[in-house]
Length: 100
Length: 162
Image 1 (tube, each protein chain N blue to C red):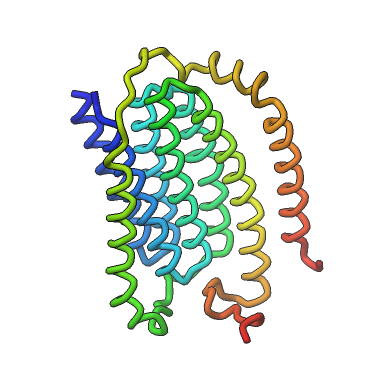
Image 2 (cartoon, rainbow over the protein chains, first blue to last red; image 1 turned 45 degrees about the vertical axis):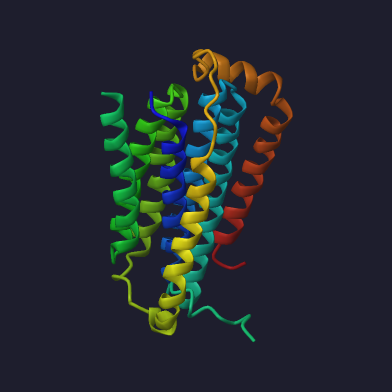
């Protein structure tokens, strides 16, 4: 039997990789992929606790995270297409109209 | 045996996640993310969340990642230009701070006390369906509204002339 801490550590490492990607990468699609990594790390934590406590709520929550991830991907990629059409670039440093 | 599988899946998941960041072209990042999601479903199976593992492969690695790869190929992007020069000196602060965050999370998480419960089969489709349509009915219906909004929003954003 694997202790729950191991799963949680894997989740923490994956979450940190996601955070790192979000801050390091400049391509907006890569940023969306980093967000997906973070969501998955949280999902793993939810499932680990759910199986530990023999309660289904954690797994139900993963469903809702999944739905939000799908909605986020759809809207985010539509925004990416609109941004690419207007600027011919996906670099987030280039879209700085709102920057003071 | 189970431990070996755990280490295999965990190593593949972490390695693929690192590869997502390392790759220059965003298409390879997306393909690597699919590998990570599949390894993650293996971890779900080890945790006895069978139904979620299947959903993970079908919805995440299937539907969502197809959306990503579709958009990436549609835009036909060149390889990533390295625009990180502006942030170069931030590395010296960012890496120690990131490691500190990792240390904090692991220190918190490592002290989680194990709970002994009866190892019931809680991850079955039956159990999830029952819970989803009784206790979580309102959130379930709310997600349908969320998906509708996302659908309309995506269509509006992708229109030629807004």
